[in-house]
Length: 502
Image 1 (spheres, rainbow, N blue to C red):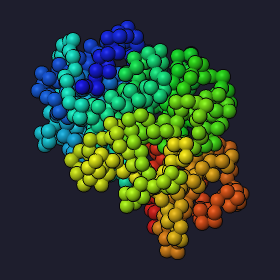
Image 2 (image 1 turned 30 degrees about the horizontal axis):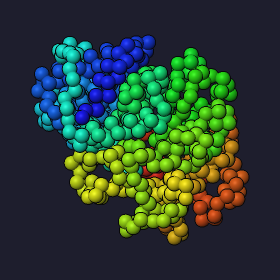
Image 3 (image 1 turned 120 degrees about the horizontal axis):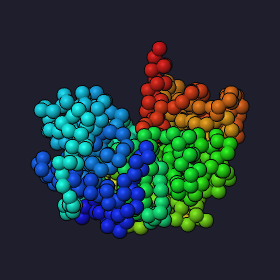
Image 4 (image 1 turned 60 degrees about the horizontal axis):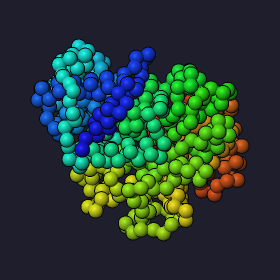
């Protein structure tokens, strides 16, 4: 088994179909597979062996995907790092992952050159590095069939900081990534006629597996953008080329500002949101204006995917992440590991072919999260209703205990999003001598609106118990986010704590 077989099969059945587009340049499946084969044979000539680590630290590009599949074809493991990493952060992860070769961009060259010789890094692929991609491809030859690997062998390592901010290398097997791509494609009814816009980073599980690998698996086409560009996205849609759209909640909120949005969607048939919970009010407004349901699923880097909520659109339940996908088990357990009855809140635990192998060289974190019989502790709180729908209550580590009462931030945030002046919000807890933790609401108002704290408090009191009402309301121009668009509550807490010390 080899994840790269997905590319080879698409190139066999649809050699002349466009696989990738970027800045007016297109690559067919035959061309992409041929170039990946040349990368693979070049890597083998350099002494890269099956199981060796090969890194990628660069923004999304055609070259990124070409190098990625070349690494897989050679039987090596792709270590995908954020293109935003610099300095000590970059050095720390490279030293931890120990790639022998890395594909990057010129701006990283100075930092990476310092790591050569002290660790395992031997070659840097970028302009002015040891060689650029054009030279690397020219060094190889084709055709070349992907080296067969055991289904449990690690195909890729993706780094995730989770809620703690401490990066962990998630080891994903060839089987888990093939299973995930196949499952996502089935739920999205994906075909070779689909074109998806991708501006989400490939080092993240959403961009790499859900969008990129699934598109390649189905022989669809990917239009690559370096970042979200409102005008460019709407231009592509108006041309009638885009059929599937993937984004994070912030992007949908921004698109809903467009007064003529519903007239500019072209042939768009499918919308999906991930990386963070999408407020019910946003789902409702999008459906009312466009006629399209924003689909959601549940998953994370360690277990991708777990559920889907839209195989039958007429049974879509707003607020739920849907039913468990075939081949995956989900149980709700208490903190002692006992299985709970339906309707009761507890930790979501998952078992199936989608589960990671382990955290790279982190046995303590692995044993904390993964049991010997294969159950993964998600750290998320949820419940399953009588119809089998999974509902996410909140992150276990985001739970706020104030005055002895448990408050789940997501519940408060859902009510805040129903207030017409709120565009984005985050509920966090900060230490408090009287309450233990004080609930703080950080809010970004909609453009042109002035937020009335008194009116907002009255609104919350009509919807929530008194102990859930924030003690503090903080208006911000923007909220800190990860490159994938997830609101970083740990950064908000840090900002509030630092402000309190001044």
